[in-house]
Length: 343
Image (cartoon, rainbow, N blue to C red; front, side):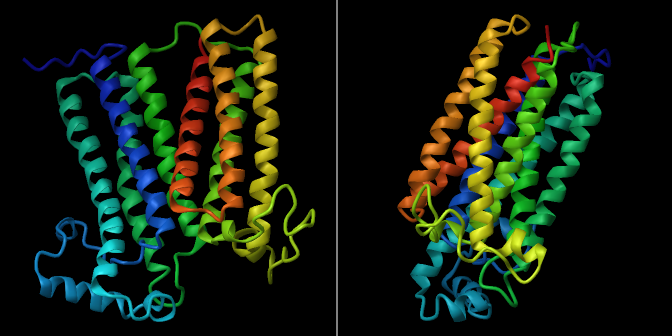
């Protein structure tokens, strides 16, 4: 019999949310590969339902290829591409979109089931509903991003790529946080120490750095200034300023790479500071201290990987690994911020 008595916690709901978070993580990784292989513009139409099926005949493949030949990326970058080469980039983009549909179904169907069964803690229902809405919005933003590269550009607009990745990572953090709340129940006691603010500030800094990384990717800024710690032998890039403040912040290769570097240095220092303060703190439980050291370790590895990736001109494998590392760091920072709220 259906029960409408909702408990304060629900382990099945938590497992569901963690599973969807894992799918979102996979989508972020596949999205990174799609961007690095320049595959994102290979499908020039948005068909939320019929687009779930790939071309099923030679004529269908030729029709899709013909549509691709009409956009600037083909004419200016891939002129003369064969059908077999087109299929390679098509499969990356199709796989990314298919995974998006899987994420949507994996969230929406169990959400309705758990809601009817009264298994979602009442305080989390609105949060799950917001995530459902954001998931639907993500599909529209994905097409908004792709459409920016179909008429006048040979790639998507960097600021739209940043928006698309930023929303995916927002959902990733919300899924983890809500899953933890569903697993543990409402906090009986919440920490009022400064650690709560510091942990949230660090989480925000990691998220901001991810957005800057999206601008680097969107501008192919990892393919220039490939020495470190200097930039073509200088402290500052020789081509920093754009035509306006916005073009500098969002479209200048030198500017976006410099900003990504500077925030990385700040993030590294902040992570070491958190670990040092956690070690000396009397207000943190032991597992939170372990998390603080884990965050510092991940930041160190991610920084080293970023430098390596830059200096070898961003091969696809390292670029994907760096994006995956960013998501792992963000998830770990969210876990730490969640834990320090509880005594």
